Image 1 (cartoon, helix red, strand yellow):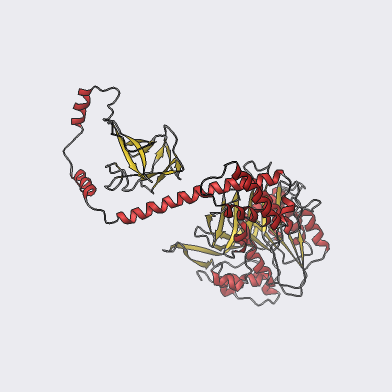
Image 2 (tube, rainbow, N blue to C red):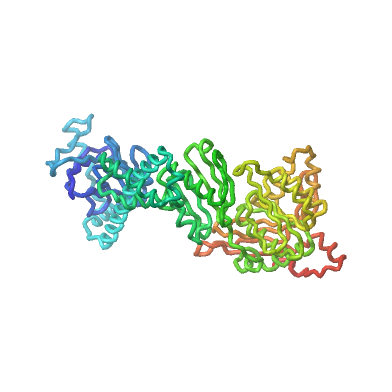
Length: 583
C-alpha cells in the first residue's frame, strides 16, 4: 500500500529541498530509479531505503560502500527512525517523515537561514559549474538504462523480507516471554515440563488472556508461539536441533537473544534464540537434571552432560546480562593414524610419539584449544598397552579410552555439592597404584601433585595444559606448580619440571580454523631463568590457498632428543630417520 512521505534533503553548504513521495517505500541512491537521487561519487548506486512496518519507519543500509549514518552513528543493522533523527549519506543530510493522505504540493526550497533571496540566487548561480568529464559521466550514468537494475531490486526485496521476518520474530518472542513469565509466577514450570499436554493447555489459556486484552500484534502466528514455548518448557528450546546436529561442535550463548554455533571450526550466529532469560535458565536446568546433576542455587556450573558434552554456564547474579554458557560436544575419537590423515600432524611426528609412549616418557600437551588438545591427548593415550592400569583425572571427564583397565576420576565442585577438587583427586589417584596417570586440562595447584606423581612411581604419564606455544605451556605449568601452596624457589620449580617432563607437544588452532601439532620439543635442561627446550618438529606455514586453508609442511629440525641415548643403551629399536632435517 502506498504511503505518503516527506523527505527533506540538505546538501553540504547548500539549500534544503523537500520531496513529497507517494510510494510504499523510499529508496535512496546515486542512479536513476531511486526515489531520492543523490548524484555524488561517494553515494552508492543503491545506498539505503526506508520502509514502513506497522506505522514505524525503518532505515536499512543496502551494503553501501561508505555507509549510512543516523545522528552521527554508523548504521550496522536496520533501525527504527524516530522524530528528528537525521540521516547522513555522503554530503547530504536527510530527514524522513510519514504523512497521512495523498501527495501534497511541494513547498518551495527552504533558503539558508543566514542568506537573503538575492544572495541565495547569486550563490545558486555560482554553484552550477560547467560539467567536468567526471560530472558528464555521472550524468550519463543517471540517464542510461540500468541492465542490473532488476538484480538490485531483487536484493532490496530480499533485505525487506529479512526485516519483516526479524520484526515478526521479535514480536513472537515478546509474547512467548510474557507466557513464560506468567508460568514462572504461577510456579508451574517443573510440573508442566514433564506433561506436554497439560503444558499446551496452560500456554493456550495464557495466550487467550493476552488476546482478550488486545495485546497480540496483527497477523500473530499463535501456533508457532505455542510450539516455541512448549519446546522451551518441555524440551531444550533452540538447542534442540543443535544438539542433534552432528556438524555442530560448540554452542555459545551470551544472554537469551544471542546464540552462536561452531561448525567445521567456523562460528556463526544462530537465528533461533530463547524467548527470555527465564526460559534460558529453565533449559540449562533441564539439561543438567537430564544428566542427574543437581545445581539448585549454583551460579557457576561446570558439568559433563549425558552423551559427554561439556557445559560451562554462568547464571545471575554473577552474570549481570542474563545467563551465559558454552556447550562443547566431545571431539570425535581418532587414532594417531587418522590424525595424520587429517593433517593434524605428520607421520614422522606420530612415529616419534609412539616411541615416547612405548618408552614410558612423560608427555606434556599444550593446547590453545582444550577440545582439540583433549582429542590429541586421547589419541596418544590410546597407544598405551591394554594390560596396563590407567587412571585419568579430569575436572569434567572427556577422555574415553579404549583400554579395558581404566579408572576415570572426575571433579566438578562448582556443580556438585560436596565435590572433590582436582588436587585431592590426583593424590587419591596415586593410591590406586596406576601404571599410567593422565590428567586432562590441568589448570591450578594440582600441577604440583602431578609432578610429584610423575617423579615418583608413575612413569609414562601425560597431562594437558593451556598454552599458545611449547614455551608458553611450560611457563604456565611452572606458574601452576608455584600455586601449589608450598613455597619453592623458581629454580627448584624449573628443575622439577626439567627432571619430570620429557616431551612437549603444542597443538594450535591456525587462522584457517584447523588445529595442528605446530611444535614438538624435548625438555633438555634448565638454566637460571627458564626450562630449556630442544625443538624437534615444527609446522612451517607457506601461505594461504584460494580456499582459505593454510599451505605448509611439517618439518624435522635435525635435532635428536637426549633421552634417545638412554633408550639405545637399553636396547630399544629406534628409527633415527624421523629426525632427518627438512623431512
